[in-house]
Length: 444
Ligand code: IFM
Figure 1 (cartoon, rainbow, N blue to C red):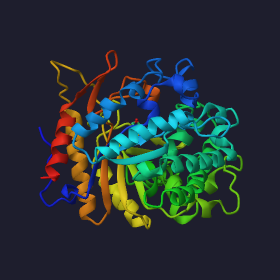
Figure 2: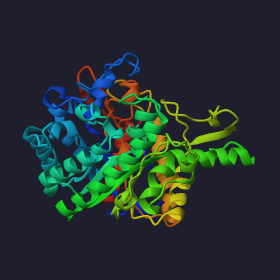
Figure 3: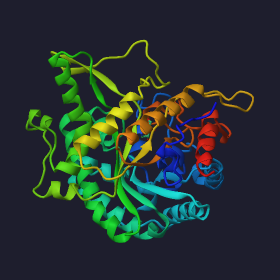
């Protein structure tokens, strides 16, 4: 099976960036060569990770990175999106860790030497534990620590990075980590979730001018995830419920970047739940962006609920991925068009899109038809949005390879490359082969 796009699709233009993505904690391992992070701690909490696993080895990328670069090269993609491990490159005294910096210089240098463009995220959830011990993202000082880290590491790697992103999915870091506690550091307090979100956005805004100054030739932005919110019925209450959820889960993270304000749901929070905002914060947060990264996987359907305000309505009898997320590509098109209408967007990159599958290696092959179908449908949905005027410059598959899927441990496989965790053997899945063929077909 192949991935097919209409011959006149702009996705097929050679200047459209095709890439694969990973993150540090999910693939690196190498726990002994860096400081502990909040996920190391979270993984020790009984019941926090579904299979009781941790990231101590993961895909052992810290040892196998040369082979992994060859793998990326063999996929025929233009770009690789990775994240830096903050606790690998910074020491507690605020100095860079030369060993950690050398690792990324070697990795990025090798990618560049192979002609692969480098998209680097500074924060994909692995906060140094020593900062969490001081309050983590609840503490305003963490935003300044992040800006300092961004400053130092962007100076050290400036010549090797094509695009910097400050944060990946601040929704997950704040809401999942500090508000409902299903991700590290596992805290459950609405006010802490909102305050953490504000400090994350502040951290982004503080880092942007430093990135721009240290790497003027690179592009600078942030990566946000969106789960579009649909009302179950046309009833006013359901429509209002979906709108509230959209403000709370999606617009909260993008509106301050462009409008210097939180959405209207802010005023419905109690005084303790409202984040403390200092004068000038929104001016910092709304630093100009060269690009906006978008991550999309699924949608949610909402119903009004007398007690909770809104509830997610499970969709029965519809196609879902192995992690239980509905496959609904129309929401991808809808999302892009909606953002395009609401905000003065810079060029967009789809930084993550993909599906978890119950993959099995049989006779040296992984026949992941569901994932292949998912990519096919979502590339068409993207093409549809681009035809209606949305300026999208690139698309990254999540993920290059199976990896540590956070609270799901190693149970959920998102890779277009299969990883046998017992042997660390990598096998390109059928979706990966199709992705390679599509990417190479653009180059004639
Ligand atoms: O694996 C994650 C990734 O780290 C962030 N975005 C969603 C992916 C799938 O859950």
